[in-house]
Every structure is written in structure tokens, then in C-alpha cells.
Length: 497
Image 1 (tube, one colour):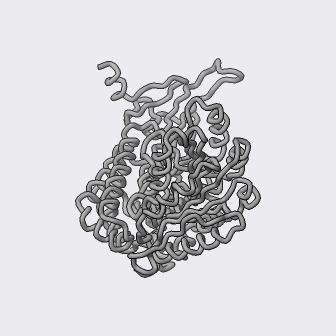
Image 2: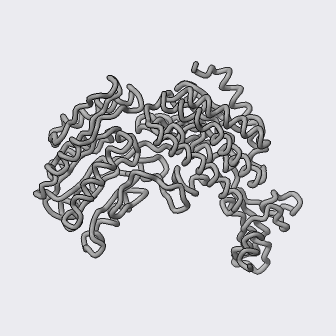
Image 3: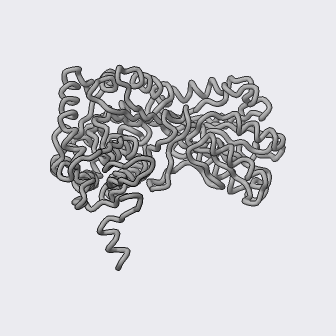
């Protein structure tokens, strides 16, 4: 696909800006119906989309069909959030002459879409984090027109998906300009700094995300830019946990860091385990048994090789397994790799080892005692996830969990971080440099809040108020009225029956 020209970009952004008010003020139920229509349309075109994804991403059919199912579920899930309505935070405080310390005026608040959002598609999930992925679904749900910058790793799939999304939105009655795609790095950068764009989101590398974040922050009128930029996702193992279920733990680790050829942002890139336990030999055999596989693209495979070479050259690191990538097309091949370091050397060479290696590689850090383990945990900067394998009644677990909470958005216990559930309690984010906004998530119900802002109305007559705040509650929303939660009419009826 050819890059979007400046003239084409201007037309797309003008259409998005023109669609802003109509889309943002449309009833939540109407936006929900539009998202459902997109999900249904993608289901009807599943065979064609999966075939294109196989050709461009080199991922297996079963993985892609599962990912497409997740993508459709995400769209439907946000449709459900819209119908439930609490995301609007509709709040009514009636005038109160006795309110301390002074009389309170009539105040009413609700959330509204920020405006057009530029979304940068991710490359490792050609459905779930791409054209119709989570950022698109949550931004559209918030009432924001979306201008999506296509990932260069799957342009034909992106074009086909975009056609489906646009047609489905038109069928559902969405305003023209509610969704469009652009191609090329320059078009993406120009969109970020265009005054018609109100926010941005990104999934990718630290370098790319930080560059775009700086553009968004450096505008004359800065905008929020929500970038997910990768993570090491450290896994900490206590001696007691290793003794209790050694084989399952080691199998789980190797399976997790090699899943999807290590191309998950939640891949465990470092295992911190007790020294002197024979763990290296046990892991060596498991890693050697992992078959080589193709990566998403030659560019990603090349960057993986370069990062791995630099990681192996660090003074603190020592090769354990560097598996040959045989039987896979040249330029795409990647074999599973594990390198090792002592905790003492890691603490000296921290910056050299705390580098995400996007691919099937991980680092084993061996600690001598609990003090070294704690010191290693304190050495990490922001992460998407941090995992602890321990016994529930271990005092060490009580010491470590608060440390992990400080560095990660999601803390796991006796589990593995690969796999992110689309649900209300999910937090897929973390302190910088994992993301640019630690208080937000890109997966789960709260993802919609990235693209909303609260607006308060004071003393506005009821007929002039938006439907969400009118006394009659024409949208049937759950609301907070004078400090008391009032369920929607449907919720109240269900409670009675």
C-alpha cells in the first residue's frame, strides 16, 4: 500500500473532526449497536481475513482464529459497557441552600469523548491490537472518531479489515469519518501533531512510543498519548516454590517465554531463581527441545538478533542455550535462547541486562540469598507485569509482593503473564517505561476511560442538558444523585424481580 499523502491525511482528519460531535453525543446504545455490527461483519469475513493474516504475519491459523475471536469479543464487550452505562459517571447534585460551607448550585457531570484519536496499530497481534483491536474498540466506544495508522507488517490485512469496519459503521448509522486508516510513518507523525487530533495510542517499542509521546507533549496544545512500550515481566521464584513443584514451574517458564515465538509484550524476559539448585541444566534440556519458528517479519527477526547479540556480550551474562534456528525460512528464523547471570553481577550490570529482547529469549538470574533476591526486585523500573512463585504462607512472599506492586501494573502469584483477559479487573499497563500513563490500561473495561474527559454543567435548565443528565434519564443510565447511587431502570427492575 502506498503511503498516505498530506492531502489525503487532511481530508481524513477533516472528516474525523466533522464526525466528532455527532459520534460523541450519540446514545450509548447506538454506539453499542455499531460495535456489534463490526464484530458480526468480521465474523462473516473470518476465512478471508485469517488467510491474509497467515500470509503476512507467518502466524499459524489456529492462533489467528483464536485472536480474531478475541477481537470480536472485545468489540462486543465494549458494546456491553456502553449499554450498561456507568462509564459515563453521570452525576447529579441538586441545588442545596444548606450545603456547607456555602449554598451548593445545581451541578451535573458526565464523561465525553475527547475527540479524534490517532491509533498506532501493533504488529504482534494483527487482529487484537491492530485495525479493529482494543484501542479502536475503546476509543469508538468513548465516542471518539478513530484514525488508525496501519502497521507495516500486515498492510493487506489492514486494508481488508478497514473496509469491513467502515462498511459496518456506515450500515449502523455512524457518521461519515468515524473511522479511517492511514499508511506510512510520516502520516502517523503528522496526525499526532495535527490540532484536530485530541489523543493518541500506541503499542510497540520504547523508542517508537517515546518519540511519538514527545511529539504529542511538545505540541502548542499538548494531548494525552497512551503508549505501551514493552516490558521484561520478571518472574521471582523462592526456594520453597521451586522445591514444591520444580518440573511444572520450569515447564511453565519455558512455555511462557517461547509462546508465540516470544513475541508477546507480556513474555517473561527474566527468571530470578535460587542459585545452586541445578536449574540451569534442567532449563537447558527444555530450551533445546523447543523447535525453531518464524518470527513476524524479517525486520523483527533482525532486531531480535541484534538485541540478543548485545545481551550476550554484556559482562554479566553467560550463555546457557543458544539454539540454532533450523528448518525455518532465512531471515525469519528464531531459536529459543536462555542466558544466565548471577544476582551479584546483575546488580553491577543492571542497565545492560534490563533490556527487552522481543523474541524467544530470556535471562536466568541466580540469587544466593533472600537479601540478593530483594535487591534484584528493587532494581527494576516500570513493568507491565511482575510474577511471584512462592508458597502462600512464606514470610518472603509478604515482603516481595509490595515491591512488585510498585513496579508493575499486574502482579501474578504462581501463574504466568502471557495471556491478558479482557475483563473489568484487568490492568494492562504499568509505570514508565512500560507505558507513558501508569494510571490507565489498554485492555479491559477501564481502557475506555483513556479517551474520556469529565464535563460539569452548573445551573443549566433541564431541557438544555445532555440526555445523560436530564431529570427524566431518557437513556436509562445508572447515576449518582445527591451522593446516592441510583441504578438504571433495568437494573432496578432486575433487583426487584
